[in-house]
Length: 193
Length: 193
Image 1 (spheres, one colour):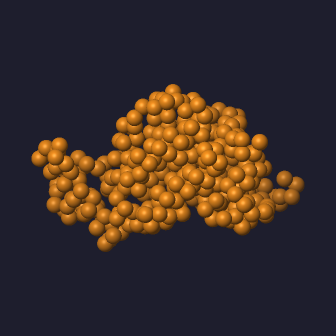
Image 2: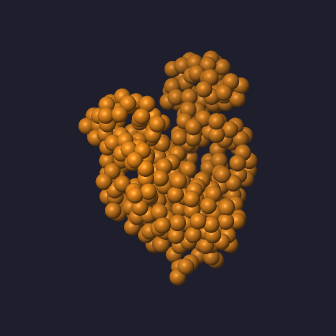
């Protein structure tokens, strides 16, 4: 935080106020009954400030994914994975480095899961985000020189482990990463023992 | 076909006319510029007939998925899978039995892929369908007495192999199943050798 300018800190605060206001309103009134104007008003910012940070009210629900995608794109270089197992191990290492971003804010997780379950448009948006995560992971593997077919598959399998972990964990944020790790362990099986 | 009554044959014909008309119109005008009324008119049926077969114009694009989901739900009983590898092998067997339904009508595939790429709402719908496929596969495994965590994961991994196969194959319908089989072979690796 010491590295941030006053302006940057103000921007971060405004963004967080918008997120807090939006989640509070979604919980009070239901997602469909909340407008961007309502959120801006509750957050005590203008509508133009809202749109500086988020494209629409759906995006507020996925504020954590933006950080995750940025971190994936900034993944360090590495060796080309010669086979699927090595590619999956590399994705696991990346996942562990970014563990805090995979679930995002754990206090938000249960409310987010309820919002997604109640609003198919948000589940659609979540799927788009997961597709972008898969694209990002695939890009990391490709940039290391990994074979395209292996990179595509490793990325999709990693996302499948997350999906399985999410299903198993339900609304319990603390259970997501352990459930995902168990999925990966089952998947890798005795390949890496 | 011999088992179908005249009425059933007429219904099948009407449904197929609607699908043909819709794909022709989507190709001519673009998905966004085609209404249900346009499709019904071209297919020479009434709007009420359209809605007897499809909930909206998006659903026409996924007419094959309905057959696939029905077939998955009608999968034969089997032994509980004691581990992930066995569960994946069972899902592979099911996939091979339903191979003709996984890709659907191969003449439609390239146009469908183009429609999905150009219309995010259709890609969203495709993701919902894949989620229902995962639910169906999971249900088959659970009904055989397979452990829930294994069933959830095997279903998600199978869908991941399809996604990877679809990405690798692109618009080439004939390449989808082979690419999916290669993904499964990579995934199972030497587990079943």
